[in-house]
Structures are given as C-alpha cells and as structure tokens.
Length: 119
Length: 119
DNA sequence: GGTAGAACGCACTAATTTGTAAGTATCAAT
DNA sequence: ATTGATACTTACAAATTAGTGCGTTCTACC
Image 1 (cartoon, rainbow over the protein chains, first blue to last red):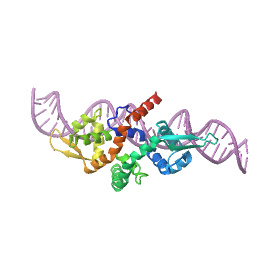
Image 2 (spheres, protein in one colour; image 1 turned 180 degrees about the vertical axis):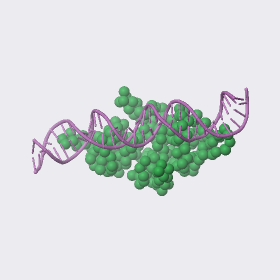
Image 3 (spheres, rainbow over the protein chains, first blue to last red; image 1 turned 180 degrees about the horizontal axis):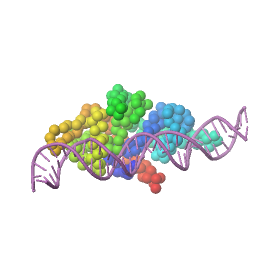
C-alpha cells in the first residue's frame, strides 16, 4: 500500500478495487440497485467464504464505497448498499467494463494462454 | 487466476493490469508515445528492480499489450512499445485515470486512513 | 437441552506475489 | 587480464493476500 502521491490517477482506483472479491461485490451491488443482505450478497457473489466477504466488504465500507445498514436485531440482520461515491466510481468503471465485454474473446484467449504457459 | 467466464468485463481487465508495476509501465509507455529501452523504462518507472520490471513486462508482451523490439546486438539492446491492443486498453483506461485524478484528494485521504488503521 | 439462523471475529495456515542476490553472454575499453 | 555495459535468468527468501476452522450472541423451534 504505497502512500500518495500516485504516479497516475488509476493507481488510487486500483487501491480501491484491489482485492479478489471487490469488483464482483461492486458489480452485484450495482446490478441490484438497492440493498443486499450479507447472505444474499454472498449468494450472488458466488464461491466466497463468509470470512473473505466480510473482510472485503468491511474494507469497502471503511473506504466509503459501501454503506452498511444494521437493523439491530438478533439473529443479525445487515444490508449493504453503494454510497454516492461508490456509485460515482462504478459509473467511471463502466467504460472499462464495456471494453472488457467487447474484448471478451481476446481476454479469454489471453487467460487461456496464461494457463497453458503454466501447465 | 480464474478461467473465463468473467463475472463482469472488468475482471478480465483486472487480470491484464494486475501486477504491482504494470499500470506504471503502461503509463510510461503511453506518455512517451514511442519506444523505450529497458533501462530507460526502468528509470522512468522508478524504484523497481531489474528482475521485477523484466518479469512484468515479459508478461505484458506475452499478453499482447506490449511489443518487444530486439536490436540483436551485444550488449543487449531492447526496446518496448505499446501494441494497438495496448493502446486501445489505455484509451479505455483513460476515464478511470481521469476520475482518479479528479478524486485525488478523496483517494489520498482514503489511503491515509488505511495507514492510520494499520498503525 | 439441542439445533438452527445470521453476520461476523480470531487464530492460524496456505497460496500467491514481490523482492534479493548472484549469475549469464559478448563486446569494447582500460 | 579486468572492468563495464545491457537485459535478462535462476534460486531462494520475504511479504502480502486469501482461505480454513472454530467460536460468539441471542432468539425461536423441536
């Protein structure tokens, strides 16, 4: 985690979204356009442990990308939603997301070539 | 390195630019708008070892983002430049870069808050 | 009493990424 | 002969990230 200054604006963004599950979390929260409970978010993210999800979404809350809504009941009932900052980031991420979709074939081929190189 | 399919287009991109030095390398190659020798690239990237630079640019070459031009002399003389694919990616990255610059204060504050949390 | 539910926290391990140190090849200059 | 230059490679160590297993709280249900 290098301190500012960033060599390029994107470095700071990479720090924000860096973490195995963060992109998917952002994606799920954007797609839903509302709040997601922890358990529902976990279901939507897919193969992620409670621990890892909890850890990474906790960071995202601390960074101001996500808001945690605690219903203060037992069993615990918590929901998460994007903050305005988080939504702003997601719209800035959209062109890249779109580029990635448009180049999916190329990206998939690259990924496969990487795997072949390691086998 | 999960194989395709990607949950979101950006996942593939994150795979492409994931690596401590790759963003800076892209940035330097874009800013220069031409070829950079290994030694010059290393100078411009800053505090990076020959080994790490070599490793990460080798991956970028393999992924098709960067082209390696070997002058076939001794001492070795090699230069690197962006491919069309690399340039395309960089233009797709530009909005993110711009967003990062515009939110630099916020990103810096977040980075600082992270450091404080770890102290 | 025991079990289930939900969203975590803690201790420790495993996996991955990054880095250090030394070495390589060949030519030119001292 | 020795040193310097350049762009790597290899072996191993250090640092960081991701994951496993167990535990917590309190209520409801069997």
